[in-house]
Image (cartoon, rainbow, N blue to C red; front, side, top):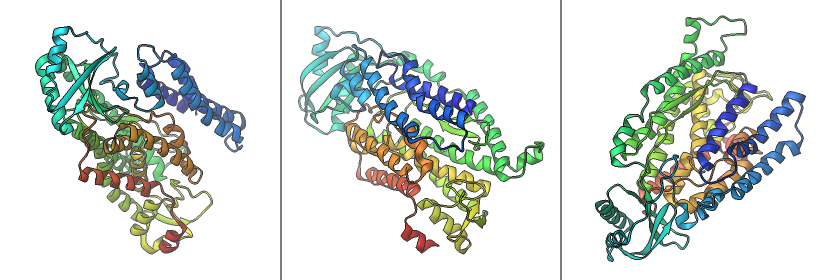
Length: 497
């Protein structure tokens, strides 16, 4: 347990450092301590009283309610005077007009070199009156805000203004196009941290194939060990041999295929839109009794701004949908090779020895795979490939939750805009919390979601809307999320079983 607490602490520090370090003067270690307080309280209770002793409601829910409020207050209290309203907007998770301009990277922001009168006149000439009638230019510490009236389509306006600014100023600025609180779009010129002269050398060090390959091999090993344990072929005294490891390969290969295709789809979509992105990095974890799966998943990092909401949508939805396509046949095969067993009180959402499909999509797939072999009084002893498939569904669902920088957060941002997407994220977190009282397995999800900022970075052109086809696919993705995490209604249970 101490190992997992340490791992959670490192992960939490990384999240705090990446999300709020640049917008508040509050020490990072203080914010980290606030975020870790619930884990410290719950771990301390278990160490003192054991896992079987129920925790008082005040200790169970109190830190979960108070710590997010204290976290938000500390960010507000320590916000940097240089960031002004931008800090307030990011800390509250809501866009406050031009101050909510996203940083292109997590690196320290470059200082904006003031433009002189001659350059200001040249800048005004970059805004044709028939495209975007420029009314005034505001000077901010980290941006030039250009306000006016949009007189053509957002796509044409952004393309025209960007080309004119680049022709006049070269690669000196990134051109951001957003909507203000009044609903009117504005342009913001932000210092470009990736000058063309340095972009080539930076891209050469972006991909680390050696690191990616090492993590891949390590994760295959840890998931193979997890597969051996899940297959039930070992005890504490069993000696691990090469022949025994083969029993863990079906689980390992199935899970790695699901996670790998998910991240590879993100990577390829990012490359399609010329977004600089790292190779997929897997996270190996030694299997343990309380987390027996052998990996925390995989991720990629995007190191350059997203050009528009269309690209944001495509990159966001590519991973979950590709992973889902791989998950379904593997899950069906694994369920078909699972063994029906007697239903017990311990039968849970992912209990390997006694699995009861209590979620809607899992119940439908289980019935499809087993037919009459699965009844209301039976559970399943899951095949290792079925365990990997169930994890694939849960990973897909978690990524589709429409909150912040999760894939679902990118999807709703692209569909409805940044401000509406942030509101949807707030509602989604509350709904997952409510769901956790029905399906207790989602309680950890609810906790994690409340520490994820609900607003993600805007695209460079964050005004142009999606086409109807992408809106439809976005609704399909959200419907898929609901079908995965929704408990089986009683009426459906009667029909199936």
